[in-house]
Length: 111
Image 1 (tube, rainbow, N blue to C red):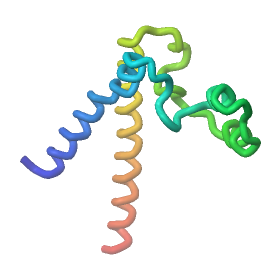
Image 2: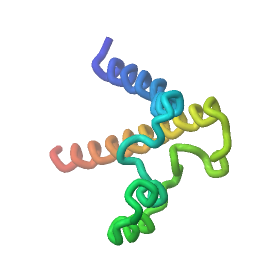
Image 3: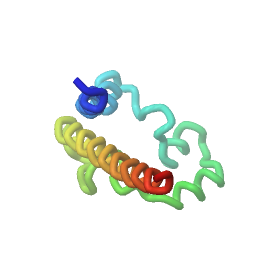
């Protein structure tokens, strides 16, 4: 088995495990993952939102907020798990495509 094939199998396993980031906190009533807080959660935890954080939060809107499709906020855990898997596949595909393009561009410069 080639190294590339082992890499893709490992990535596939990580994709399959990605819903654990949704299921485990829900099961243990842990709330949001550490560091993935929005301004509303920061407000609840600290009583205020730092001005710089507020400004930066408005700078970028994620294409798949909360790793789900738009309008799926009230869906059950199974459907949201599917959205996590789709989000992982889309993210990995984008990274792989950009990496290949950059690699090909760098390879042409050194030939």
